[in-house]
Image (cartoon, rainbow, N blue to C red):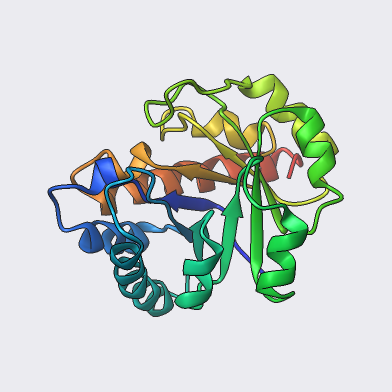
Length: 219
């Protein structure tokens, strides 16, 4: 499956509480989000509640022709026929996830060091998330890798590299210049009331930087 990782939105219970969460995500999709990852880490939702939310999200992402990825929960991904699963270093091994999901699903993995990126090259995954690029409010103790490490990660990654962590519209240009194939965000979109404008602003900033790189022959 060909996937556009340009603007990868991760859902977050904290940012979506006390608002019409589905409308917030739909507005972000209208604004230019290219991948949606369902992530529920608050611990307050039952598996059934997550399943019911995912069913709604599945319909929405189909409507916009955007892949739906489920964080960690292979069972829920299968239950709603999501497009894939995103796993961390301490989740089920990628080989096991691949065996369960089959060859036609997307698998992404989180990495926090160049060694982990190198290992991910040989794993049955489709993309590599690398970060945290900057400090971020959505992680208690993020491992901050920084822009220079991102440049090095891009040199060694043999799969699409998605930068994550503290990326906003005002710093996304340096992330794209460092070589990221896409950016994964939460607060850059869900932290705003108008998620359409927030997504549109991010997408515009990314595309502007890519145009500049192309003109310079760097892309």
